[in-house]
Image (cartoon, helix red, strand yellow):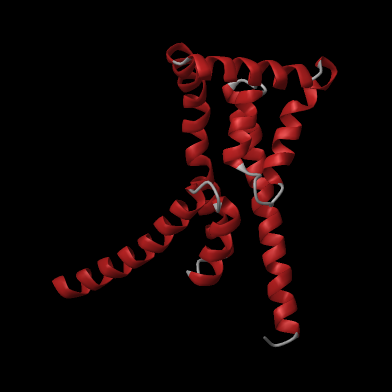
Length: 172
């Protein structure tokens, strides 16, 4: 009676490791969802809907902490270093000056679009920094970055589906 339970438990751990690996890959600043989703679906053989959810969850975990910690860390650095004080004051003034008042209402939508674009240098990590620089409130930034991550997941899923279809056509 114990052996079948142990076998079932070991199978559960194998699946848990694939799922945990997907979440961890999605948490990385370079790969994010764009790497986690194809790896989960193609290498770990996780069905696409489950891989999508795991990748989105993993991609959003660092966003909570980034949005929460960027301001206190920058304030602390400004208070303890003259170089950081000058740099952050220059950066904030320049960034907020370039964001004209008439474009301020589009900042959140632009943030979601920026996060959704599946290219290197865009994504939830960079979107969190952009939200901080443009002084978008925490909850709004979290929502619009989440919308962007959902969009990125849909785009990556669509590209994966097209590439699998093309490979099937040519029998590769």
